[in-house]
Length: 164
Image (cartoon, helix red, strand yellow):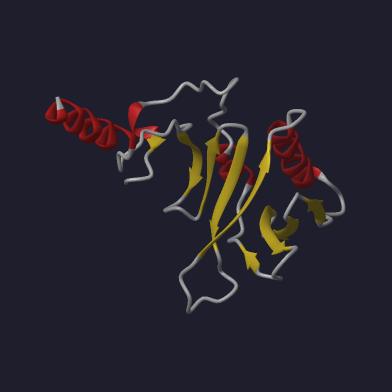
C-alpha cells in the first residue's frame, strides 16, 4: 500500500510541475515589403508594426519600427493619409501621433518624382529614426496585401514564426 501511495505522489508531482507548457499565439503575418527589408509591415492580431532600415546613421545597421492597433480601420486610414500626401500642393509634412511614438511623413520632390520618408520619435526615450525615400508605387506595394478580420489570404511562408 505504501508503494502505491508513493507511486501516485510521484506521478502527480511530475504532472503538476511540468516544465513545458503550450501557449496559444496569434500568427505574425508579413503583409508587404519594399526592397531588401528597406520597409515592411507585420500584422499580429489587431496590431500593425512598420519596420524600416534607419538611414539616420549610415555606419550603424539597425532597424526601427512603429506600431498601432487597428481601431476604427486605422490601417486603411494611414494608407489614405500617405497616398493623399503625394497629391498635395504644396508638399507638406504630416505629423501623426501614435500611442508610443510620433511619426512624420516627410514629402519631397526630385526630378518630377515625389517621395515620402518616414521619421519616427519614441515618446519615452527620444529614440529617433529615418527611413529611405519611397515613391508612390513602392508605397502601393507596401500596402498591397491586406488582412481581413484576422484571417488574411496568405501563403504558408508568409506566416512568420518566432523560431525563424
